[in-house]
Length: 333
Image (cartoon, rainbow, N blue to C red; front, side, top):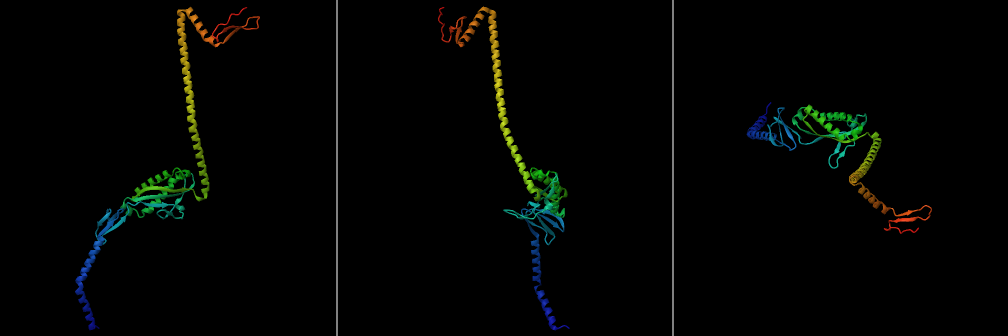
């Protein structure tokens, strides 16, 4: 049964709606325009790139700044931080980043424990720093690119460490291991088209397991002592060898000087003998007498007094007093 008041209420409502219908339509239009404007504008930060999809298909990428797209969900935007250096940690985790950085106390032996080439177990902690070079490949070429990066990094690091001795991995080969790992991880990322560029691989800490840490410390001390002794021996050798070489050079120089002196002296004596021989051949008597007198003038000043002992006498007789520069007095018999 219908009552008169029901017809009155419905007619009143319809009348009110017809009265405000233009305002309702205008409000809906304004709302649609506002939603369209809000969904048509988007901003890309300086360290990002935006991937634009239209009905699920990638159409372009845009750089930093203010951009426009089709509204109402026709175009969708995905922001990718392409200029930010990201990192993956292996064997440890950062609890609080900053100054100072605090690390988690939890151990990750499944990631860090490795077998070296000489069948020793070592604990390796490292960091892979990377950047998203191609946002489209990063988003759509592979389902979990970060997980792929972690798996590949761990596989490559285990293989590279396994190609080196444990002592090398702990000491001298750390830089080589890091560089080799970076090159191989980058090659794998390029092969799988993940859009990831490896910036660097850094070995944070390479230590033996805790159970053998004391023995390892003793080995290191022994190596350091050996290096110290080698350095001391090298220092002494560097001091002694130049000194010995200098002494040898001095002796050689003296011998060469003596040889040159003797040679020149012999050549001078030979030349003097040849000149005397020439003079002797021209005037034998004169030359013989001159040589005799020259010899006496050289010998007699050096012989002192000359004593003559006659047979049957006990007292010697002075013959010459050359040192006094005069002849002896005549002895009376």
